[in-house]
Length: 244
Image 1 (spheres, rainbow, N blue to C red):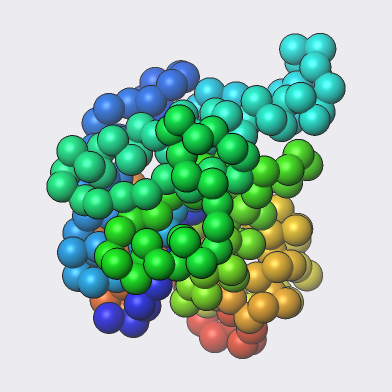
Image 2: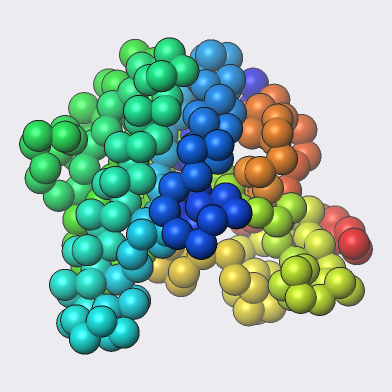
């Protein structure tokens, strides 16, 4: 296996499937099976999932709420998604632990770094809910920070496209696909990989990011096996560019 410990970042929107809101049970079970497969291989898996399918903090203005209140609502949305994923994983026979950045002792353990690492060492899938527990930080930032704290080998950002393109491939059929690209090139080209806080955390700690299509069955396992899937963002200069 190329990676011993991974941090998988999933968007809340990915759980909607073809729905306009909420959680699609089919997508939830699909993700649980993908995670189960790599966990069974001995990979230590941590997961951060967004809450955009329920509520995003940046929507606060639309509801007449202040940003801080909205961000806390968004954190609670991530906990709902995390609980759903935990249930799906346990239904599939995977031992999990849900750690929260805010105290909700009835349903989550509080986030303690050493406890999280110990759970991973015991082969449990660890889900980090509620972001980092503070407003003004996205779940991308939470994914980067938690990955650094638990000393993950890589951040795997699951999306619905095959990786990083020069433009939105769903809108521009001539968009260039990058199989390998450096942090520097991502910044200079103004590519949207993660928010700047999250991206800078990874760059400063030399933590590679792989953006890939989580909706293609087997992609997660192929990545862990060392196959070239999606786009690798690292400190090295761009090695190869493919056009699709």
